[in-house]
Amino acid sequence: MSAAREETEASETLTAPAEDYLKAIYAIGKGSGPAATSEIAQRLAIAPASVSGMVQRLADQGLLAYERYHGVKLTESGRRAALRTLRRHRVIEAYLSQALGYPWDRVHDEAERLEHAASDELVDRMAATIGEPEVDPHGAPIPTRDGAVDETEYTSLAQLGVGVSGVVVRVSDEDPEMLRYLAELSVVPGKRITVKARAPYDGPITLSIGRHELSIGPALAANVLIAPLADRAGRRG
Ligand SMILES: [Zn+2]
Image (cartoon, rainbow, N blue to C red; front, top):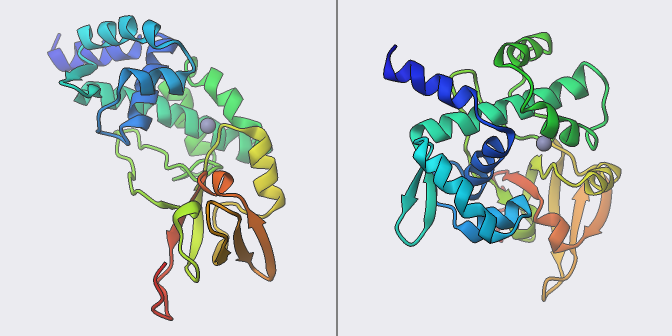
C-alpha cells in the first residue's frame, strides 16, 4: 500500500471532534495561517486546557504542525481533510436548501451533524443532483472534490467606506436569528448595496439596497462580506 493511500484512509476515519478542530483551524488561519490554542478554544467554545491533547493527537497523525510562538498550522494533509469536511458541510447546506426547501437559517445546524456522517459519495451525488453549486446558501465557496477552493478575502460591510457600492457575497452562517434578520433586511448574497453614511465611534451604518435605506450596527455589518464595485465617482472610503 502506498503512503498516499494510507494517508487518505487515515483522514477518512477521523472522529467528528477531530474534523471540527481541523475546520476551526482552517477558519482561524484563513486556509493556511497559524492558529493559537486560545483561538481554537474560543471558536470551539471549549476550555483552552482541553485543546492541547487533541492538538497533539492531530500533530501525531501528521495533520497539524507546531509553529514556534504561533500555535499550530494545518499540514497539507490536514488542509485536505479540513476542505473535505467543509465540502460536505456546504454541499449538505446547499442540498437541504435547494432540493428540500429548507430556509437558510435552518441548514447550518443540520449540516454540522450530517457533515461527519455523510460519505463522500453521498455528498458528490447531492452536489450533482443540484447542479454542482459553487457556493452554499450563505455564499461560502464549496471546495471541489479535488480540494480546490476559492479563498478570495472579501471586505466586511463594517469596513466599507461612505459612497462605496458592492455586492453581498457571503454572510456568517452560524446564528439563525441573525440570518432571519438579514433576510428581512434583504442583506443576502447577490444584493447590491451602497454605504450612505457612517456615524462616528462605531455608530450605525446607513445603507441603500435598491430603493430602500436602512441602518445596521457595526457588529452585524462585520458578519457580511462584500465584493466592492469599481467606484465610478472615484471616491475612496
Ligand atoms: Zn454552515
